[in-house]
Length: 234
Figure 1 (spheres, helix red, strand yellow):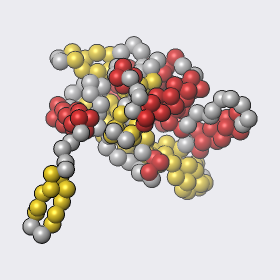
Figure 2 (cartoon, helix red, strand yellow):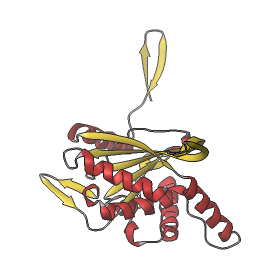
Figure 3 (tube, one colour):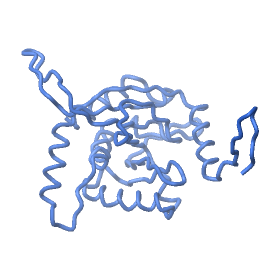
Figure 4 (cartoon, rainbow, N blue to C red):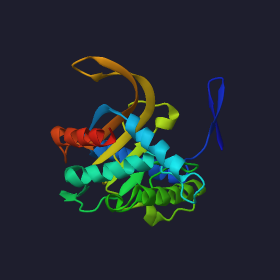
């Protein structure tokens, strides 16, 4: 690495890796060419977590691994996108392409940097099929053996940073897609569960952040998609 002297400080400088250059170029292009708007909300994930625990218990001792929270969200997001196709779209020059199939990219932290393997036809597949496919793709991404074609052709992206204790954040749109869902941590806290009686209960709340390209989608349709996804989670 090249050594750079700045005043009394001695720092190490090294060129960006080829893959880091690709990430840098794509992120810069997204920031430069899109009109990003982020909507944030939260969902009561108590029932979702209870369902996952139930499934995990039922699968104990079997050859089938239980789906992760991300797998379940990929399935729900895919179903929501079939009803809000404006978000399942991409841009090609001056053309807006609304896709009939839902291919969900899942952001993965790998030794080489951010990779987004794609779970294809997520709207047609069970959560167990999604989980099996996702586990294989994530393993390939982290070992550097994933094929290029498995990181292309996505129509929407899900990025989960909840495991790092992150709440709401602003995910960057994965071009040429027009939207990305950021998933924050699930935290137990007291909330009002009945507006009339003001009854309070401890629930598992999940933060959600939807970034969309305002050139292609208006705020109201994006909000309705996020609203539907919250209802499905709950």
